[in-house]
Image 1: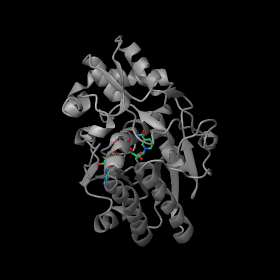
Image 2 (image 1 turned 90 degrees about the horizontal axis):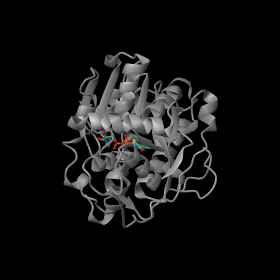
Image 3 (image 1 turned 90 degrees about the vertical axis):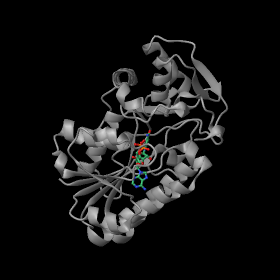
Image 4 (image 1 turned 135 degrees about the vertical axis):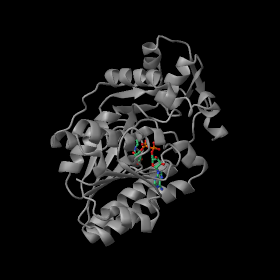
Length: 329
Ligand SMILES: NC(=O)c1ccc[n+]([C@@H]2O[C@H](COP(=O)([O-])OP(=O)(O)OC[C@H]3O[C@@H](n4cnc5c(N)ncnc54)[C@H](O)[C@@H]3O)[C@@H](O)[C@H]2O)c1
């Protein structure tokens, strides 16, 4: 099975490629990774695997037409993903997340309408929810330029299925954590700063609730959707383990036997209070997470402690300084 993985040098994309090769047993030569090496990407993420890498932008029509030809499937992870950056500089998000998705759809329509597209979206497209959990057909009510651009990508995908008969499915997942996550995200940042005995910044009161899923469980769900997901369907993916940011950081500090490092910083504007998804649809398809939050977190802490070579070059002053959103970077 020939698969084009866009954004494959980012956190989840690279974990997916690794999972397909190491756990599923797909020949690495069957996988082509395209990535523009933007924010969040890292060439070290896949340097030990033999898949073909093409440096390029998903907005580049000619390149995407070439790459899509002959593929059985395209898994689209490529996106601008950092919410704070979407607030300070939204345009890059419109380009990658909307125009990029459009380009993939257009080129699939023109040169390979037989391929299957798995479009990776996010729980953030629904907006936040005080009680209960969102189902796949709930109204999209994104809060940030990031989530708005992802929602726009989703509706484009569904329109191309309807209008041109493309074979596409959408997954919407909750907060991922695990190995190869850019050090400025909450969990790696907390691990790295705790190791260095530095204060760990938490937005507002730390009461924002997220459902946390171990990235390997997410990759397994994507593979199931690739194999069995039905055309035009949307699948929510969540672990069901909801935690406040304060609980997450406290758990990390407990694992690392370090304490008193939490520091509250000014909240980001429009910060969603709680995200929650009902993932019964994908569970009916045969998926459930294999790792509890405790197990996944323990593996993650161990990985960061053992792989300083990976994060050290990335952990510059911006990561190691407790930066409130206003200072930007
Ligand atoms: N991280 C999470 O918790 C989470 C949760 C749910 C959904 N998602 C979704 O999963 C996908 C991957 O997220 P991630 O956390 O791995 O992000 P990431 O920022 O680590 O990786 C994104 C990758 O896409 C690449 N990219 C961006 N724009 C591109 C373009 N125009 N052309 C080619 N490559 C481009 C970047 O270089 C990077 O390697 C995204 O679509 C995101 O919306 C992430």
